[in-house]
Amino acid sequence: MSSGTVWGAGLGPRLMWIAWPAFLVAGVLEMLVFAVVDPQDLHGFAQGPLELSPGAVYTLAFFVFWGAAMLSSALTCLLAMSPFEVNRCPLPVDGRPAACPRPPAS
Image (tube, rainbow, N blue to C red; front, side, top):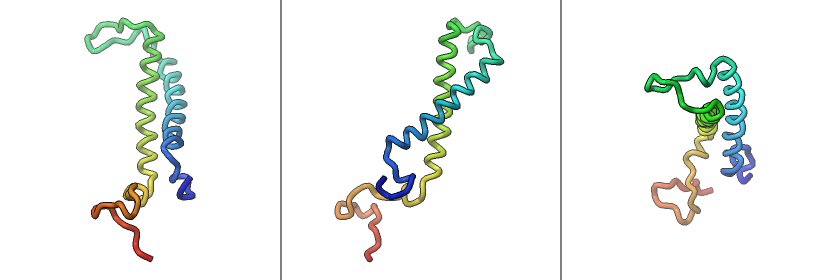
């Protein structure tokens, strides 16, 4: 970690901070929802029963739940970033355009 803090981690660890908790939440949510709802009783927007196997309904629901939980986790990671991390310029100091702030001279 370059900055010495947990938020200075690269893209890989951040993706795992987002995907892994979301995966666990999606699994728990799937169990809770389908303990109450039977996939054979679901109806689509056309008011007819879904013509999907129960396994397909479970799979689609899991990925929808996982996507929603990943969005939530990603928003949490975004909001946890410091202003320095959000506003820092990724270019080297000598190659920055005028709009990219330079560190103060010391």
